[in-house]
Length: 303
Image 1: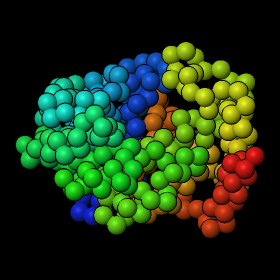
Image 2: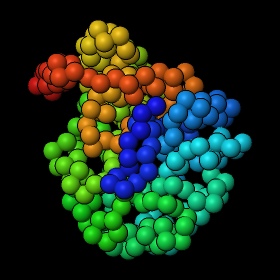
Image 3: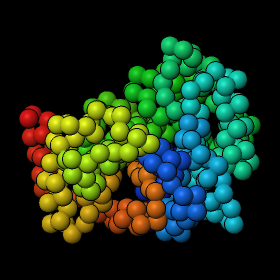
Image 4: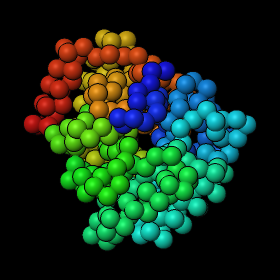
């Protein structure tokens, strides 16, 4: 497994990380034993970065069980405070996460989203810095912040990482956010590289998601919008076929083409899905392949 340095002076982490939202049940129920096997198979295969959050349902407690028997020492464990970003809320969330994960500290603690209107960023980042000073987290980071929001946070407490949504469909971070991170030496942990399944090639336009799957309520997974994305995935799949890889692998490798992306967080519900992700770490896309991908995406956006 290839590694990249997290931020300008952080540790090396695997370029593919395990996003733990799915094992918490957010995309349909997952048997706990399968979830534990999924986490351990990822670590055994060289995945070091595991990412969860306070809001990821049962994800933290499941990870806590998976990291027994020596697995904790083999990973870079990241979680997030979700919702209450007051100083008291952050302290309480950290303590609850440590208990659920059954650990004394985490490697990375992140603010899950920007809510500066409700919680002044100065107090939020000061509380994050205090947790770092107390040894409850080695590093701090932010998630779903844009460049302006990151700058406000960084001026209070310099942080190592940003966790943005990034994939072939959602490219909003390319113009300002990635350049800002490169300037500051902030590592990016790209989440949702498969656009919650749109870039897997596994769905037909008439697919109906179960009611306990979050996607059942998302507009892009319904009707004509969903049919368009399915068609795009089919065209991208042709490039993957010619490259002798899966569309999943192509989508992850596409994210990793960005030097500012330290790690791509791929969610998984089974060891088989983890195994499908891994070869992406060794795929270097050619300029021609990137151009063809851009053409497909551009044509879809224009239609």
